[in-house]
Image (cartoon, rainbow, N blue to C red):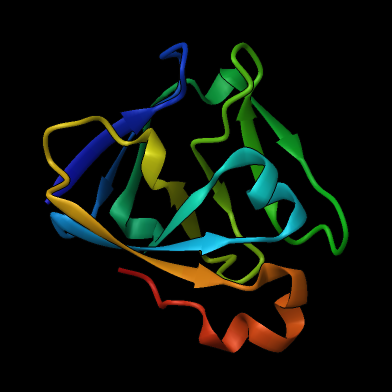
Length: 125
């Protein structure tokens, strides 16, 4: 099914195809722990940016592989291109609109030891 979502101010809007019951990862790396990001990893074909491309700003650090995309108006990162799956997206499950998600299974992920644990990350939904 398709779930709609977006940033806080509404300028960035997207849709993502995923099951009604989501399996997400709760990462404890420096950026995810500070932002409360719950990762729903999806293939590019299952993600559609509907509006707000011009409102996105890019932040990169460390290896520069991940493309952290934030709304430059409200500051919310509702999705990004992750280092673990650069050919897809990680959607913040907390940024999905209500009404289509029936539940979430949250798996902890030790992102502080990313290199050692990346093989254990959930594959795209």
